Image (cartoon, rainbow, N blue to C red):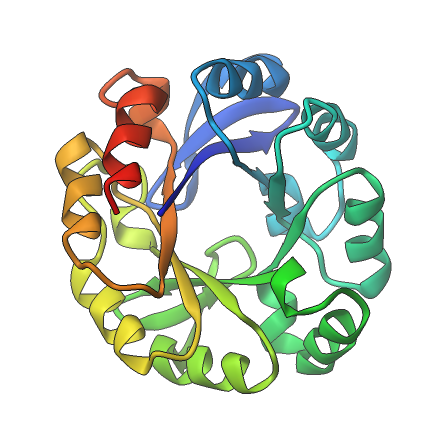
Length: 242
């Protein structure tokens, strides 16, 4: 398993949202690069960077921060407002290893085909964010009538190899990930999964490791790192046991 320390950027700062609520924001670093350097100094081998302004509005307002973080030399996967092939190419040009599609993958599925054709399935991740089992879009503002498992299966058929799954109701709460939802997606045996949302302690990471599934690629950890409940070295020891 991989550890993906999270750097969510809004208004140029590293922040975390509670349950995906843009009105429930906690700011941690005035410069997101400071957070990135902390995680890398701790041994992080990946970084997960999300442009929250882009996720909500579709504009790449924090592109300069992304480029500075990618320049650290650690592989970066990034999402938030990547809704065109041009925006995706621009992200790769800034040095990222993977792009994460959210809203665009659902609203313009032909974009998925184009990006997979241009960059390969391993370079494209789709973020499936859910409330009560239904996919949400546009920065978690809109809840669709699409079931997560059905969408995951259809994305796998289009060449997507990896999905980030977040239960929005758990994000930022520190009460553990949606293990039930993860089991349902893993049972598809169609795509690799990255768990996100709800990590509050090392035991939450261990619970994922205990799923013992080869399709479980890793876990994204945000608030727990910023507030010291989990450290990068300790988390790496747990995921390394997988």
